[in-house]
Image (tube, rainbow, N blue to C red; front, side, top):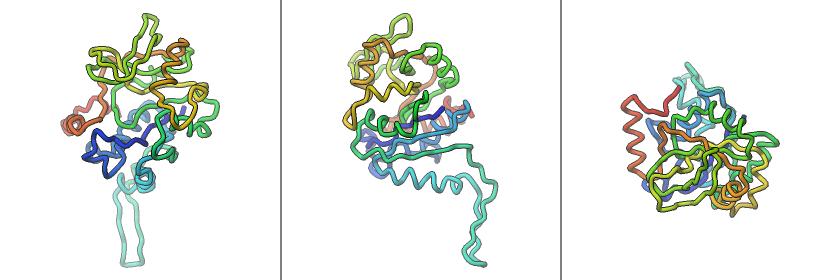
Length: 257
């Protein structure tokens, strides 16, 4: 099953670093947060990724092009030409497709643009700026049992993100973006979707968290998988520092590998 990662936004709320690089390339423990997310999925056996790039998309492509340089020991031998010897190569079994989905494309539009790479298959999607300790295998099983078009992961957070009204049967009754209500379930990403989701996205200007998710909720085609463990996005420099502190402590909750 393929994993789609949204990595094309500007990251204006963490502009101290995103001015120079895409937010998913901001580092936690010397590795981009995008790498941390991919390691989570890889731990559960999901190793094929489609990255929806946009803002400074060339930096993402260049990083993966040189990935083995970042993860291996290298000898540069200038005595006999310009030779490079790679020692102890430690790359993951990943297949990574980086797609330029446009600099100003909205989240729904980015998903729509990678449809040719998905085909008629169930796939996963999450945002390139949040880490968690969700059991992704259980999430997929939950989605398969629910037989709906989309399943999202819901967490309880007191902050202004996509507020969910969830029924007793785990069906999402409504989806309200940036409500001022505290202590409600919010959309944490880590979604599983059927290819029919593309029918709910009209084009580049579609914000996925609005019309598509709202329609799915109205039609009873949106389920929530409630996660009561760790989840944290990296919207601000303060949150970036919190994640860095957890990583340096050696007890980062999302490090399952």
